[in-house]
Image (cartoon, rainbow, N blue to C red):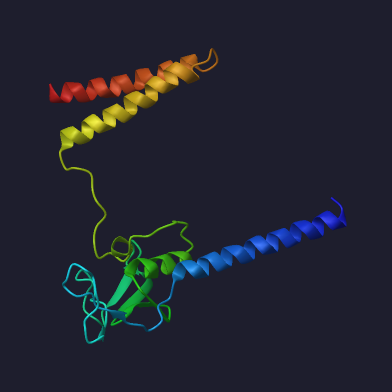
Length: 185
């Protein structure tokens, strides 16, 4: 690679790094202290006649103002924390408009690569949706996934070289299933 090409590659890399940093900064969207006009109860969506400016109503799901929310790891150590304030969520000295925006900033600091974050789930204020608790439904879903994968392997990936390995794996799994079947029969 010539010196000219090396300089061009280095310049491109620097430009890409600068663009990534700018997009991360834009994603944080810190809130400047501003208020919004409250919409009246009319269907026209007009502002109040006196032109009064009011603050946006806080989300009812948020804890009270002043609450410190901590994200902990599985060992109980605090990984990051934010504070609920009147105008939003303060994380790392910056006031964010939403819990999700603060979660995105915290996730970036923790070097997580998610494109989006549900703030309530990230900070532990709600649990992520779980699969139905019906064990038979879970067994059916697991069987459907397993059968689909095995059928795809048998259909597409069996060659003369790996035919005995695939047959042995399926035979071993069939024995385990037969053992389990015997326990419930």
